[in-house]
Image 1 (cartoon, rainbow, N blue to C red):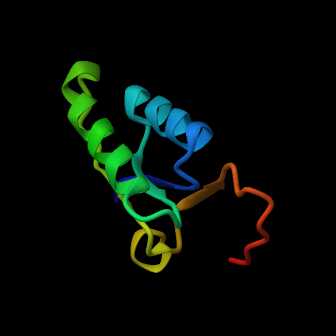
Image 2: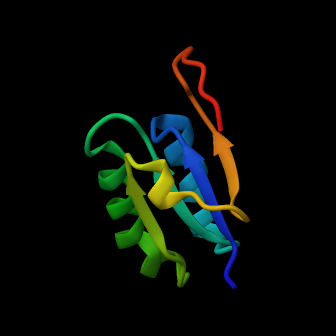
Length: 87
């Protein structure tokens, strides 16, 4: 089973962290954000950059944390904008 890191927050901090994960190739990566289209767009950009890094990792993005985050994943929260969330 491949390792997967889920990042909650696809702003500057979350996208930069995802870029480091993709560049290093340590795990698959999913970006999750409440803003419509933001996480999907950043994930698509990172997906297109995979050949430049020479990495074969899966990158996905979306708004639905239940679909993108599962038990056994490492979950990281970045830039929550002062909102409190419960996992």
